[in-house]
Length: 394
Ligand SMILES: Cc1ncc(COP(=O)(O)O)c(C=O)c1O
Image (cartoon, rainbow, N blue to C red):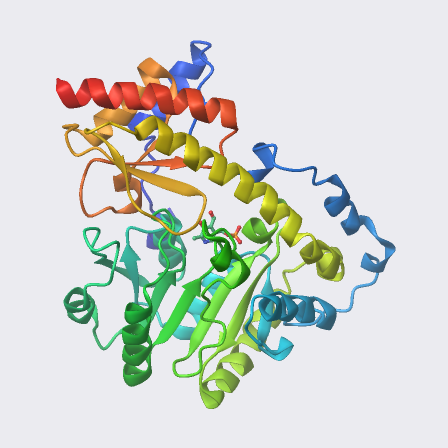
């Protein structure tokens, strides 16, 4: 058959998906504690924001490789309001951060070149890399030290084919920001070895500490190493369906200029961002505070509920985090994480993600989404904790 090796992925349904499908086929109402689609979480009324796409300004097509000036300026203002000056000329619009990753791997890597990701992390990276013929090299973070970098592990993974290090900041699903000392090391390594830092800050607005909400740590002002900061509307205003992401090119002037010149041709080849969303971007981004407040209210209420339910339990605890939409539970006494989540779906009709989906270096980790509707979250957590207590005993 005339198909590429890069698309020869295994398409077998995993046992968890099977257990879930049978529970639903049997009429069970499954409590989905993995819900990360904000448009299903009843957070706010998005109709007025989506209606901005219907404005007549979207009638004319005047393509610009990096996006329309007013849209790039709106993104630059977003960083300015968070305390970092980003010139609009360093902003590149794409249809999503996933697309921006694809463009960056084309910009930085020849087939067979390597990018490093720090695990646990976002599962889509393996597909995004396979699609560009790029080899993904995983370096484990130290959970014991709060998901800090193990410098020895990173150095052992660097080869002459390494082109970039990916940082998810704050990380998905651990919710941890890159520690300032690790950041200094990573910037120094990238500058010295002429590597790029690719920093995914999609969850940057969702800190649990209000001081960090006002001024989240960002790499968008980085000057020492070539740095690409990724974000977009999927998380910033919880509108993944409108399809607009961006990347900010930062770092030393000469590298930045060369990166932008090459990216311009990449972006011009696709011209993938729809005109209506670019024209509406200043209005859409103006809603980011109220949307952010609604999401932070949900994640904080669910986190408080989770912590109350965990109080006094010895067999399970929550890992510390700074930000994001997820919480990670550690229950080391449950013998088989994979079997546990399958049984939980089949018998308790509760869906959680097992840590191995995200490459956790140790077993017995369970990920829940704090975006889940509050009553479903409370009931789902009660069933999850009861099942963990039961499995830890037996
Ligand atoms: C870390 C991370 N980056 C990027 C994305 C996806 O963003 P987009 O919809 O812009 O491709 C997600 C979505 O969950 C994510 O978790």
